[in-house]
Image (cartoon, rainbow, N blue to C red):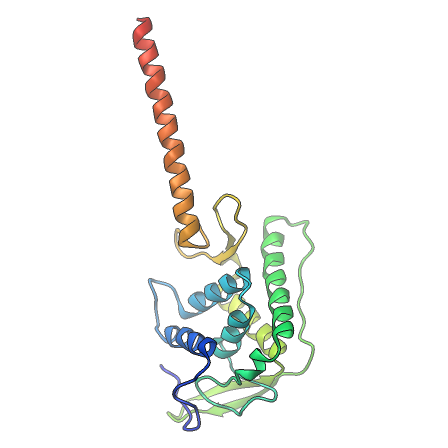
Length: 225
């Protein structure tokens, strides 16, 4: 069910990044996307942005579109659909980058521990207090509302998404020379379409060389007969 918007929410955000993450939030309202759940879609986008160094997009999407309704401390108030003060992200690039690095290191550590049981188990902590309270929407629905520092909210949302999607579904890209993570659904093997095409093209060339070698060997045997 779509989330209701408070009457004080601006209808046309001017920040391009804000618009982009709002689009991710709208996509999250779709119950299924190619047989993927909204949580899988969001977590895959977040991890992809973390891997690509897009810290503001990753952290902002987590806080805005994660499982909990959130409001960073010092924000503009408990807006229903997108309760984030954009300036909190634009004015803190170093802090946001640090948060993104911590999240990526954490999820990579989880995958490495699953692959190699001798790898030290990762950990991540919230530095402050997150306050939870019920939030009544205009349609009468009551949801959990969380308020705290951006880092703490991002960690909270990330951990909850990992739990909902399942840690076993976070995989390393199957392409050669790529170690990016992605959310595996069904037979997916690669983090991106680019890696998929690159791998398939390499496999096709290898198969063509092997077929050419077999044909050459067959011709040589015929000459010897």
